[in-house]
Length: 189
Length: 243
Image: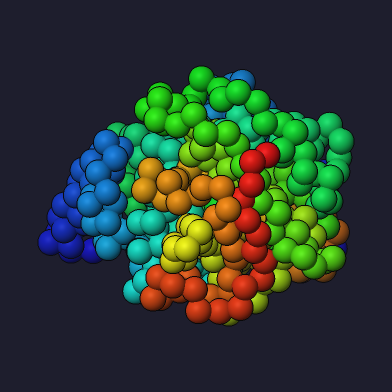
């Protein structure tokens, strides 16, 4: 990334943080402005996880209603606004995925499976995270990297990954854990 | 295969697994409990979430339909400003946990029985402006599906519980309407969930939920009716009457 685009991203990020601060004081115009700047990204994330357009649209409505209510809990010192928004979208999408994959479960049971904990929006991001994570993921074995990406982009759990790859659950856990331990070693260097 | 299923000798990367969403069932509950009780684990988890969240940069953007914003706008006028899960709904969940039953008419009806004086979290303004009593509408006459809509005017809270299976077509959205006696239908938003819905209505909409008003659910294009008026088949409807 060149310096101009880094600068541009920094400015955009600061703008989004300011918008979130106004949304926290219940300014609907700021929510609209935030929506205009971020909805394409968040809709892309929702679609990627959910797959279905109608449900992704419902989800997007829910995300901005959540943002309206929870904007005051956003802390610009800990994460960028877009990361925070993306995480809300991801958490909500995963909630729905789990409920859908297990239609026999009632809603509360589905919530138990998904991570709906109060701490699920706790984020701590550093400036070079994106670059470092990419470099370190590249150092992993192909298989571990593939599983980590599948967990992230498809919202797949250990049992789902094991089923997908047709291996016993302990084997899958062992593959991924080894990868994550290596990843941790690399990131903490 | 030489894969050893035993734990690797290093400390298990639980926070990373947790942040990625790999954990389920008991493992997830244990990790969540740890996040709530152990600040250093919580921080490690937050750190992993922050790192992995940067992968969102790889996801392609997609433009949502133009009418989506108007539905959000309608809903934020209708949502509480702070994050207070209404005590009523919390009680319903407790009740469900206690009985293990849901998806039955009985469970839906329990909503009515659970109605108690407003908790202290109710907006004081709303309290002062309304002394009307709670109302209920039973929507639907089919064996396969019924919806109980409970309206608490004091808190301007509308709760819907669906018993049975609400029809759902992935190419469409189910939209909720209120039709005051002799008036035009007004949208209350699309239903994101097929089992339940909770909303706090803005004053302007709240005044429409009077005795005899009809609550209806119709099938609309994805994201809701583009015109602001119902266009599709009505799945269920019923009139509001005092509880």
